[in-house]
Image (tube, rainbow, N blue to C red; front, top):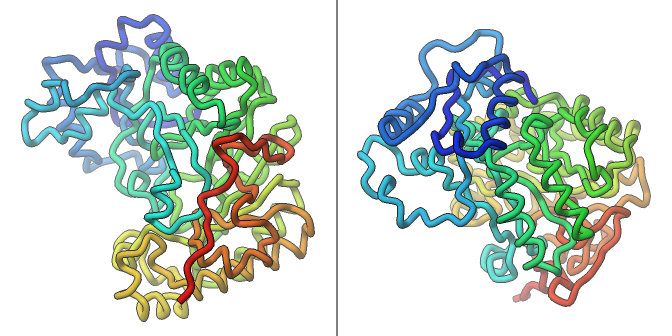
Length: 435
């Protein structure tokens, strides 16, 4: 796992009742140079004190030569595999200065499964994606990406330690209840889970269940931490998806994350081990000199790897004022900042803020042309874009909006090949109305 230097390591007392979970904590603590004497046990007597301490992070003094994000506290907890948090008096009766979200994380109330991109939700938000059920065993990240709330403002990593129980009570039942889904993501939440492997052991347990039921699983990462995959059991069930950034974006907007070339090298290693690889430029941020930056990135990707798919999503989910506060407008292309400012009033309430449609379309056309300079066949996709964008660019993308291969859809097995089911036969796209 990453050589993290957390300012504090906490463990919920319930973890001590699970031998496998306790061994996991001991193993992960040892990997970062900590013994169990360094782990603070959280029980009924100090639960709210721990929440207050986490709420107050970071301290005034941090290690000078270690990324701030790598110093976030670790919280080992016992996942509530059948969460009934509304019945937990420890949440209802907490003091006001002990934030509910932090108390819930300490107690293991981390959503075990989430439904993403249902046909109903994507219709409401005007997004095009694929409906999927995703798994999550932790909350928080050791990367500090400015476009991610957990990345920029996160105060801790809450890590579920009872993975064996989770595999039996959550992973396997979900697979059996969702026969239409061929590929599942182990994704979160707001987390880069592979950065904690192999000591964490989530992917070994996850892939074992997938292999048993002839399914596949994704990791989704900004990381270069992949050497553990070389010896991973059931590696043939794994698909790797990388979020990519150009050099300038990685340097200024993704603190605590490895450089783009390190991610490319990691993907090349995985490809050498037979693990399918896919890339997403998500989000694509139009920094100054973005054309040169992204042209260089695309060239390096195709010089060193042969991805199954490559996709794009210009920065969305973020009104311009939030971009100003979180990222800063000075690092962005001034022309595109001006376009966002001109469209701000109409974009503020849209999922696809801050950049208006014509700006995003210009970026996509450039990126598509650059990919085609190096590979005429690789499937290109737009990730979580609007119906209108797909309608305009479908021919240039080269895939049908209703049935496109992407980075991590629920029926796209290695190959890449679509394995349709009766209940998932199309994406969430439908032809937009025209006036």
